[in-house]
Structures are given as C-alpha cells and as structure tokens.
Image 1 (tube, one colour):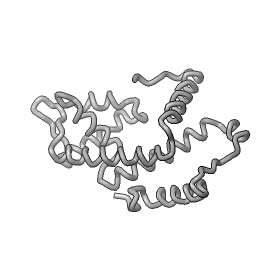
Image 2: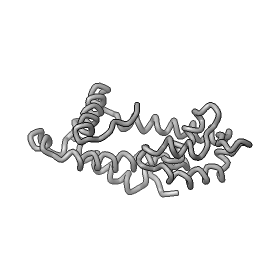
Image 3: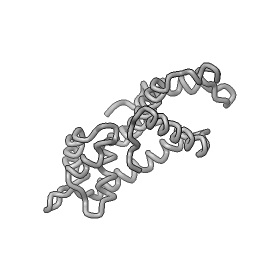
Image 4: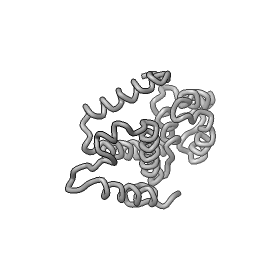
Length: 180
C-alpha cells in the first residue's frame, strides 16, 4: 500500500495539493491561474485532463488509505446494490464505460474474492460478504468525505453549470452522452 498523508492522499499528491492550495488562496479568496481575459482562451482539453488527473489521484489516494482501489470500490458497490448478485461478465459490462476499465476489472474481482470480500455462490454469481459490506461502508464514507472536500466553496448551481457546459462541449465535439 502506498505511503499516505493524514488526509489519505499519497504523500506526493498531498504535498502537491497542499502547495497548490497555499499558492492559490490568499486570505480565503481563490486566486485563479489566469485573469478572466486569459482564462477564457485556455484550452479545455488541458484543464479537463488536469482536473481528471488531480481528482482521480485524490480519490484513489483516500481509498488506498483504507485498503481498496477505486475499481474495487466500483465492483463492491455494484454487487452490493444488485438484488441477486452479479456475474463477472455483468460487472465488467456495467463498468465498461467507467474510465475505460471494463475487462481490466478481472484482476480486481479476483482479488476481492481472494480477500473474501466477495464470494461466488453456487450459481456463479458474486455475492458480497459481511467483510465486504464493512469495507464498502468505510469506502462510502470516504467517498462522501472526498466529495465534500472537493466541493468546498462550490455551490450546487456552479457545479451543475459546469457539468452542463462539459456535456454541451462533448456533444459539440461529436461525443455521445453517457446514459443517465
């Protein structure tokens, strides 16, 4: 398991995040990378990449601190919320669009079974164990805390506008909207 800071981030990510926060805030006011005139001309591809990289590292670091990877969290969550459990193929198929993991989940599923967080029932469906439920609960709490931290100072209205603008840009670029 990677070395983590008290915040749950891998130490390097935590240090970069702390430096960024210190550089970007003076007296509690957010300081942006560019003034508005320059910022409006910044490439969206760079900023979505930078945001994805930063936020994924943050979330994954916090989950790693409790002994689970993000893909393993997705698997536990899916199996927990399926009424009759799920087959490996169902889990992989359902996660295919989730950051392009899909078939790459097979080793994560195997590890969850090996750790006895999931078991295969007599019909070959994955079922979550009590230990899996306990870890899922800790991971859910971690995810809620991560979301709260990431959303600090961002009203729901601004978050909603951000998502809608990103979806319009995706559509404008010929992309498909993920099913809701």
